[in-house]
Length: 580
Image 1 (cartoon, rainbow, N blue to C red):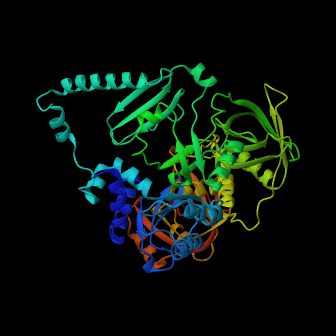
Image 2: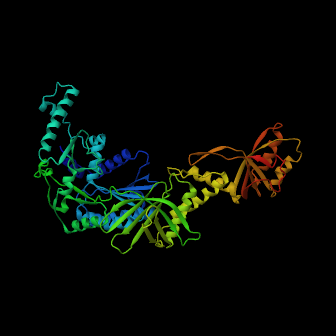
Image 3: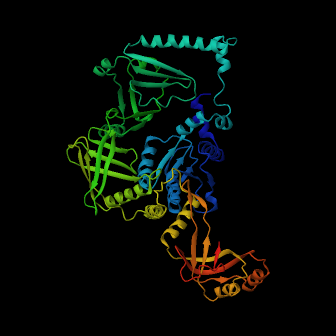
């Protein structure tokens, strides 16, 4: 059975089998994401989905077993599900998983009602039949588990047809190479402006040819990839090959938008009313058997443009905010606008869209890029983006070309948007800056998401660095018996009457963001504590041998702080200076 049969079998899966297939695929593709099934029957938060952690946050895959298409009831179901997810969680990515490919009308509805409605909050993705089939071709074990008879082994049949049963592997390679050489020679005879490359093997077409210079077409038939390349580039530039396309009005509008903006646009085969291929592609493909699945279109005028070094300034900020060197590359180039993207070590991912029609319109979007950057640079980046969100104007000026100049007006942020993630990042960065100053070195944001131990250790180091007062609910420490201190027992007893006490925390080495940190000895000063089991503590201290240690537990609540030196407590008294 062919790959087409795989599409049909995917639609025929039961609801349970489809859910199991999605679960198995996700586990295989993202083994470290901690993906778990959340059953909507158990409450109003799960809505039948899979949850895992990708891209630094929660990712949700919503499986919907809709083998008969997306109609009104299915649309309502999708909207209810995604609404419930975003009501109860704050995902960074949401993916709809379905066993069919969306029709153009359904795709337009999905883009308008789902992507446009939620893309400002998270990345909205679609895992439809063509994507699932693509991954099934990659993951052979999963394909054979769920569809054991779809794609049969053709090796034995080929050996019989070519009478190659008794040939060695090397002899088969020589024979195959000779056939391929003859095949290429026949192709080149069609039009000598073109050269050809045949790649045999693998279950998927090559994925690295998209930006390959001179590549005109790449054709994959399930067994081999045929690349059509320019042999006489000058001739092809002067007299380029032409495709005659008839398409729907909406498809034509989307292609026109792509030409104006430079953005990629994708079309389904159903959007093309007619497609006439040029020679030699029309002769390579038998169009009577040719089924158009997808067409991707994007102008490539910007592929050879150099990056532009610039500086960025917000003159209205107090004090002015400056980045003296930023590298911008042209990401998209259309007839009406150009899109620049920042590159390099800048702690901001910056996109600038500038008009080419003479109206001086410029738009910009920002995203703080934390991994691998110092907290000092991240703090400046947050200050920069906050100024833009307040509506401040910022200037972009070329370093090599002074005539390159852009003025971009900031847009005040939407007050209805959830500011908690940004506020939490700012607080986290501020704490890290305090600790960096205390340690005397720049801390670096980790490449991976900080773990709970990082947050807890950072919070403790901040308390040590600032001496900030905090509340404790209890403390455990050891006490060494010393008979020469005749008032040792009385000092213990006095703690229950509001005595201020101090405790030494011995130095240790701990890890923060992957870096070993030596804490140094610390002194914790506590205003008032109550000893747990005072009488028992006194008895154990009296019964202990000289210089013996006993464990003591004190109860709060009480105010405490870390101090550089003892205040109001006899520093020589081991009764009041223990170690936690």
